[in-house]
Length: 309
Length: 309
Image (cartoon, rainbow over all chains, first blue to last red; front, side, top):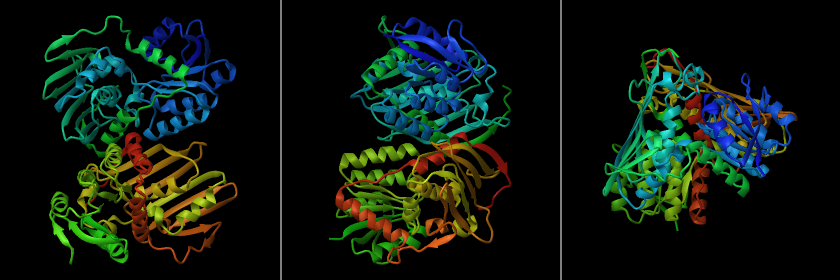
C-alpha cells in the first residue's frame, strides 16, 4: 500500500522536483502539504506542520524541503508523531541537530532519511566504483553558479546560518565524500563575505585526505555564462571527471554512458526513502555538513563587494 | 609498570599542568618531550614528534598539548606508531579530524583519550548527579576572562582556526554537555570579531535543549578585574551554580563541599588516561567542539574594535 505522505515547504524545489517525483511514484500518495503561503492543487493544505500532523493522523511519512532553519522543529514534531521523515539538504541549521534527530528517530523506531540528492546523479555510482582500489594523487572541485538564476530572491540563503555559496557547495562535498575511498577533512579555507551579508558568496577550500592528498574546491555564486558543477579526481592510474553535478562521468577524457534505465535524482531519492521505510532503517551521513561547519570554523574571512539579493 | 610517556608541545599548559601531574603520577614515566624550541630538564628532548617517535621506540603513550592546529598530524603519527594518545582541548583543528583519529585509534587497537579538563573540576560530578531526574527550566553560562592574563602573546588563538574566545568557552560547553541530562544545540549565535583578527573576542549563544529550554552563554575575552567561569542552571526543584570553571558547586545558594580527597583536574585526567590504556578503551566526545563549529556556522558576525595581542 502506498505511503501517505505530507510535504512540508512548498517552494521552488518542491514544485521543480519533489511533487513531480512523488506524483510519478506509486509507492507514495501525496495527501497533504504544509506551507505558510503556498497551496498544492488537489491535496489538503495546512499553514504549519503541526496543523498537518494534528489533522491528518493517517499520514505515514513527511518530506521536508523548507529552508534549513525550519527542518529541525518540523522533523522533531513529525518523528514524535510517529512519522517517517525525509530531509532535503542542507539537513538542518546545525550539525548537532542532526545527531538529535537521529536519536529521536531511533527512539520512535521511525526512518530518518537525511538526503544528499547529488549522490543520486547518474555518474556517481560508477565514479565511486572506479575509484575503489585506485590511489588518489589530487583533485579539483569547481562549483560555480549564478545565484540570481538558481536562488532568485532567496534572502534566507544570505542570512546567518543560510550557508551562502555552501548551499550549492555542500552538494559537491556530498559527492566527494560518496565517491572517495578515504576520508577527507578541511585543511584550509578562505570565505568571501559580501560586506552587506552574513553568508559567503565564494569559498576556496583545501580538503585533505588521510593519506595527505589535497583536493581543492572552488565555490562561487558570481558565475555568469557557463554554469559549472565539476569534480575532477586524479589517480596514479587515470583520472575521472564528474560534471553537471554528478550527472555525467568521463574517465580519461572518454564519456562513460550512464545506465539508460536510471531514473533522475529525485525519483531515486524517493525510491530509496520507500525502501528505508519498508526496512525500518535510517540513513544519515553528516560528513558533508561537518565539512561545511569546519570550513566556517577555521576559514579565513575576507570582506568583498556588497551583494544585492 | 609505568607507561613511558612523551609530551608534545612544551608551552604554558605543559609546564603549569601536564608536567607536574605526570611527575606526581607513578603510573607514568615522562621520558621524552617534543617541542620546536623548548626543552624539559632531565628528559630526552626532540624538535618534532616524528623524531621522538623514530628515536624512542619504547614509548607507550603520547600526550599532545601543542596549539590545536598541530594536534591532528602529531596524533596520527603517534597512533600509526602504535602509541596511546591523549589530546589536550580543543581536540584538533576541525571536527572531522576527530572522527579520523577515532577511526585510526580503533584500527591500531590503541587508546585515544580526547580530554576536556574542566569536566574533572571538583564540582562537576555532583552537579551532574544532582541534575538527573530534575526538570531544567533555564540557565546562564558566564565565561569572562582577561585574554592578556591567560593567553599572553598567543597569536595563534587569534588566527583563522584559533577559536578566539571559544578556546576558553569550549570548557564551559564541555561542562554543560557533561552535566545536562539532555542534549543541547546552538539555536542562535552572535560572534564579535576584532577588525584586525580572524577569531572572535566575544560570543553570545542561545543554546537550546531537546525540550526547548534555553541556556544563554556569554563568552568574553575583555574582562578586567574579577574573572568569571560560571554555569548556572535552574530547575523546577532548585538551582545550581558551578563556579571557578567547575571547581566549586553551590545548590540553592549553599556550597556543596567537594570530596577533600579529590585530586586536581590534570592529575585526574592522567589517572583516567592510565585506566583507559589499561582497559584498551578510547574516550572521545566531540559534542563541545561541534557546538563551537555550529556557532561559527550559524553565528551572526559583528566587527568590533581592533585587538592588539
